[in-house]
Image (cartoon, rainbow, N blue to C red):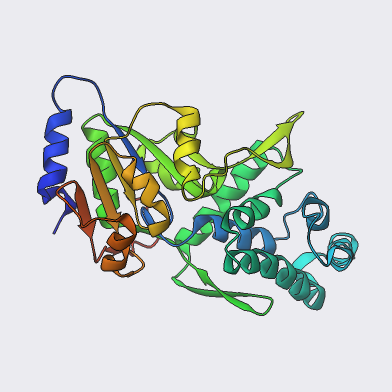
Length: 307
């Protein structure tokens, strides 16, 4: 059944058709609009193609094995065959990058872990990273939903849109809502995900780096939009309360509760709904729209809509 038949959604769309100006609608990305993690996918693509302008050892000063990481980077960069063409060094280099990232995630340092992998794009221009983001996303959309191997890890490959969120975004746009994206992935990876729905880059909130003389430096813009800091990052750019927020994650409960009206939970990871609302602190009322079994669009990479 289409999400647009939901009474709460219909009421919101009908109300915005009248006077009073467009409402603001905010969407998470990973797990909400797409099945997959576009920021992690861009990291994997960066590794697979050895796309580095700075050594990871130089942008991760607290890495415990910086000397080995630097040596591997120099070997892969300067050797007669670089990156993936030197399998032993490349496998060890990939393991060190991914172990640092996932190790911090497992330890609960999610904001730092996510900011650290964005720091790996230091040395590139903004145009460079947007090109990498576009190519990475096109690769994910055109790949079968399967897995890839980097070092000792088996990692997901293939990203797909979620039908209910596509329908909702499309309807909100047609009714004149102002659409924003907010994500804990890097901003550049999220931009091509939302571009087909007419969401411009200046209405995408994600982790990004500061620039000096047109080149990105390993200094993330604060606040890093993870968990409760998603709200703070949004408030830095626009003061208005959203009338709708959509997300999949318990981590985004502060973001969902920031909505003045409708809260949409897309349960794309099959998490326990009772546990979700125990964390909220109250059972769902009529302001909540729950999509418990979202539909994954396996469309062979076709764009779901047009800007």
